[in-house]
Image: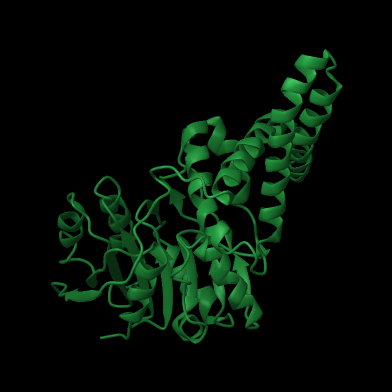
Length: 334
């Protein structure tokens, strides 16, 4: 039997709607089934997730781990701790990999320095203007980058363990923080479009986009003063100051009959969004995305501002703490 080359680690929590499609894609990989394992780390699912996962026991080299009351970073770390592969592949339950995903990754990883390789998500077919404007342009990013999302991230197990894995104190943005430490340790962080997966969880509405950015802002708040987070914090702070200025300017303008304060405050608020949207539109050479991106940058800034202030909603609150984690290897029928 060939040694395991890659361990694919998938954290799950009530993912019955998508986990079957995710595992089917892994079952269809061109890489030999004995060359990779799949480690599903469950955080206390109460739906049919684990039943669907166990249905793949006969075709995948499968291990199921369970750990509750922790952030997703801890789930990824538990999976890595039980991995046997030379390389680790972190995949999210709502991501669909192409049949060549693992063979392409293994070829690239074998020639790399052990650092991070990955890709930005592809959006599903028929996606809305929200998804097309914000996410579609990310897929083709190639070469050195500041980070790649942990839903499609490869790294050697040696490097992962040497830098301590993901920071379990972070509820989100653990991928960005992890990649910063990888780069600081002297390894590369590379984006390769050929490793992209289709992200079924791509936000398709303004409301979903807002909620996602507000949720991600929680991790940024925790790591706000760490290296690499300054850009996000500055953009958030600019929006927050703009919103506060408008709140003050509205009654001032109404009481004084002078619209100048409101115009100045509104101009300050929209300036940052306009600059960021213009830069992206120029990079893509697509002027049609300018206005949608301006709106999305404003929504992004407002959502992150609320998170920075600690004003969390129901979805933002996650249970934290430590608990015992266990893993059970499921035998594959050969």
